[in-house]
Image (cartoon, rainbow, N blue to C red; front, top):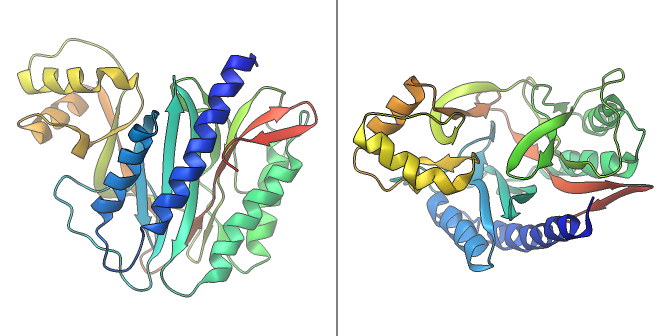
Length: 291
């Protein structure tokens, strides 16, 4: 990896760590979710970086892809388990990091995802098979009495590309991709008290453009103009300041120009924790950019 590229990853990672810590400190009983989202995304921009994806604030059984709607009135409640997942980029080079804020009393569930993340990071080096990392993650989570979320994974990162290969599983696997020096990875274990499988919910607040083609609806054209600078990275419904935005988004999805990311949740009444770091694979291990 060229030094100027690794420098951008490192700068984005340092900013992401600072912003994640500050954002987590704002999560308190009675606080509006939208206030935390606005604070985090505002801080990313104020620090001179770009928003790689809408801040994810997922509660309890929801593991990922929840973010406040434009008129969201939800507040954090006693007992909530809150996943805060943020993405920061510098010229498209991304830092992806997450933590869990426990507003109840489930420290062991939070510990499970952190321990799984850290143990997997210790094993990262060139030549290690991806399946080995999944086995480490699963062991740490199961040893604490919880289940890893099998159908969520960590992932590779590239310029303006949030999810690329290789996927980093949370369950054991045989073989698979082998780590190479210069790869950029996000390792993000999810530990659950539920089934260990997440499903698409009805709530859809995050989208991304997947193809470029002309559209006829004026509102849809305006939406595409607003997201042009995203370079395909995800955006939120609340980021769109276009009249008839909901109609425009529906039209763009029907035409296959954008896709949505439904909230991913385990069974109702369960709880999910998450921990995530981004790292660059080196010759003898890795550098964790978001540490």
